[in-house]
Image 1 (cartoon, rainbow, N blue to C red):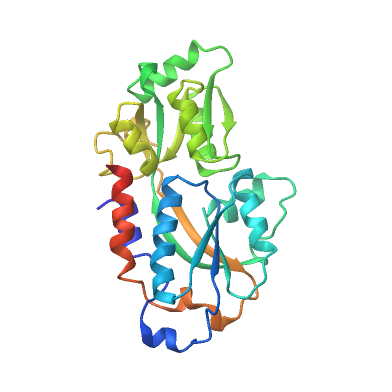
Image 2 (image 1 turned 120 degrees about the vertical axis):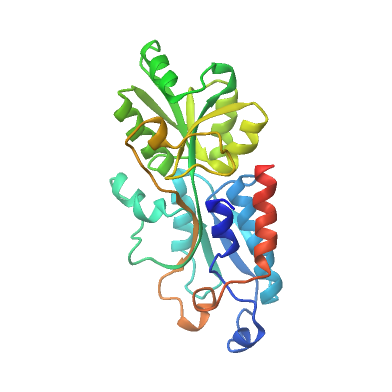
Length: 291
C-alpha cells in the first residue's frame, strides 16, 4: 500500500460511533460547509469528496464541498477566516498554506497561529517531477542537459507560488545548476494540461495525478520527491537516486482546519477515533486515480 493509501486508510478525522455522537446530539443541526483549496476534478478533490460523503452519512447531515482554488490557497483560507467559529465551516488544505505561505508573501492576510485551529491531517503523498512525453527525456540528467540549450532556461509549472511543488523544483534546479522560470497555475489540472501540450518543460505534481497520465504515455515522470520509491510508479527513481545525495519526505496531502475559538464541544473531528467505514470508499477513490 502506498504512503497515500496507508494515510487515507487511517485518516484520524471523525468517528461514526453512535455512543460518541450521542454526547453532542444537538450538533450538527444543519449542513456542514467544507471549503476545499483544490479545483473540482483533481485527485485531492476526489479524496475530499469521498471523505465528505462518508462523514455526512455518519453525522446525518450533508457535508457540502465548496471549491475555492486560486492564489495558492489564500482564497480558501480567507473564506475560512471570515466564517463564524460555530463548527459548521471547515477547510481542507495543504499544510504549506499554514507553514510556508506566511513566509513567502510580504503581507499574508491571515495568521495561521491565531486565526485557525488544526483538526486533523488527512494524509501524505509524494510529489513527482514530470516532463511531456514528446520531449524525449527519460532521466533527470537529460533534463539538465536540455536546459543548457534553452535560452533563458526551462519553464516549470506548479499549482501556485510558494507551494511545495514550486519550492522543491526550485531547490532541485539550483542543485543541478539549471536555470528555470516558475509558471504558477490555479491548481494542478491547468498546469498538467499545459505540460501535456508542451507549453512548459516540466512540472512537479502529486503522484496520484501524475500516475494515470504517465501510464497513458502522456507524461514521463523523472523522479519522486520521497525517501522511497512509490508503488504507484515503481520504476521511477527517488530524488536521492536521480540526484544524490538529496533526500526528501512526502508532503501532507491535506488537513482539516476551522476558525479559532470554535467551541470544544464541536470538536468531534479531533476527539474521536478513525471512521472504519470511510476507509473503503477513500481507498477506492485513490485506487481509481492510479488505475
